[in-house]
Length: 358
Image 1 (cartoon, rainbow, N blue to C red):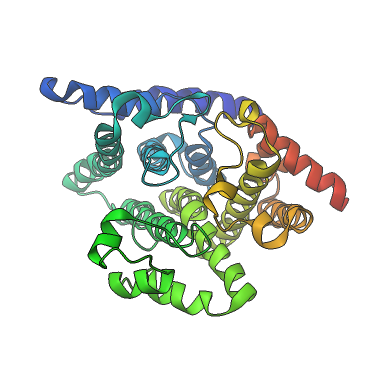
Image 2: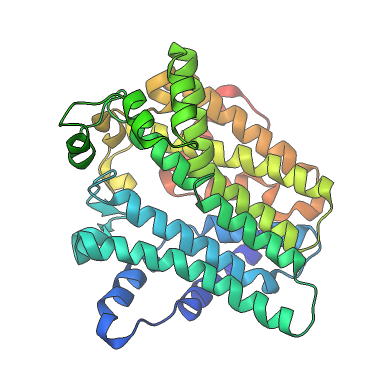
C-alpha cells in the first residue's frame, strides 16, 4: 500500500512541479529553460515525498500540502545547481547529465538557481494569501512556510555550505576575490571568518577548529546538519505543521528527519569513496580531491559505516512510534530501496554488518 501511494504521489509531484514553475518572460526564455532543465533532471523527490507523508501520518490532507512539497523541491534543485558551480564543487555531471552551468553557462546557472529559490516562496505565498483573503486561519501555513524558508537561509543550508567551503582544502582555500581583498595572502579559515565577521559561520568555525580532532568532528556534524539535514528536517516538520500535528508528533518526526538526513549524508560521503562515476552519475572522489571534511576523512570507512547504520536505526525507531499509521516513514526497507542503487547497497551493507533487525 505504501509503495502504491509512493508511486502515485511521485507522479503527482512531477506534474505539479511543472505546473507551479512560472514561465519566464519571452526576453528571458533561456532562464526558464535553465530552471526546467535541472528541475526535470530526475531524482528521488525524497524531500517532497517526506513532506506529504508527514502530513498524512498526522491526519492531514496531503493534497493541500502539495504547494509546500513543490517549494521544497525547488529549493533542493536550486542548491544542487549552485553546489555544482565552478565556485563550489565544480562538477560537470549530475544524475548522469551535464550540470546546469555546463549547458547554460556559469552566469545563467546562478540565475536559474536564484529563480528556483524565489519561485519556492512564490508558490507558498500564492497558497497562503488567497486563504488569508477569505478569512481562513493561515497561521499553520505560515509556520510551515517559515520552517521551509529558514532551512534554506543563513541558519540552514547556506550556513552549512559556507562552513563546507571554509573547511575545503584542510582549512585553506585560495579564493581570488577574497585573497585580493587581503592583499593576495593565502588565508586560513580563522582569517577568512574574522574578515567576514559572520555570526553563522565565523564564531562556530573559530570555536570548533581550535579543538583538534574533536573540533573537526563537531564541524563535520555542523556541516551535515545544516547543508543536508536542514531541508529534510524542514520538509517533515512542515508537513506535520500543515496537518495541525501535536507538539509530540512534531518532536518525534523531527527526530526521524534528523537521523534520516544524517544517514543520507553519511552514505553520500561513503559513496564518494567507494562508488564509481557510472554508479553516481558524476565524478567519484571529488570530496577527497577538494580536501573536504567528510565522515570517511575524519573517521575512516569502518566507523563511517557503523555511524550510518546507527543513524538509520534511530530513524526507523522514531518512525515506528507512529505504528501502522507511519506509512513508508516507518519502513526503512522502503526508503532504503527507493534511494538510488548505490545508496541502497551502502545502507544494506551497514545493516548486514551491524546485524540490525530488519
